[in-house]
Length: 124
Image 1: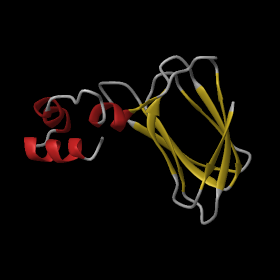
Image 2: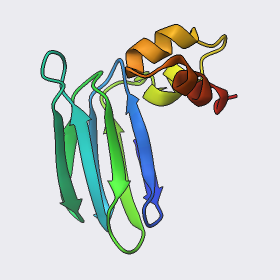
Image 3: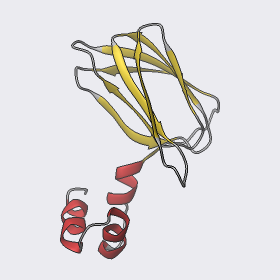
Image 4: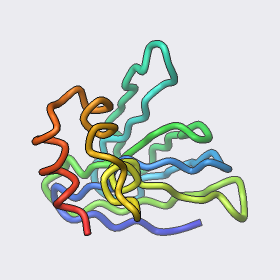
């Protein structure tokens, strides 16, 4: 279990837990939560939670949280594994060491090589 504190506009960037489902309970404020389903739909499922409400993120699906309230937000997160793992999606693609090839990133983003190179350069 862990406590998540969000300032106004704060975001827990898209990430996955490859070995766990996650339950999130909002204790204070308002959080938009969402996850993306698997192929072929890759549908974004979202909900705005208020204090006292909960949401479950299925195992290994990309998900995020964002404070959409005017003040701070607090949530408690519980994972159903002692070793859930965490992988930040954007950091994994753009921040790997060594870097993914520019051409691979460009194809994945459906962008040209210059755009991919610029994005890759922002991650050290």
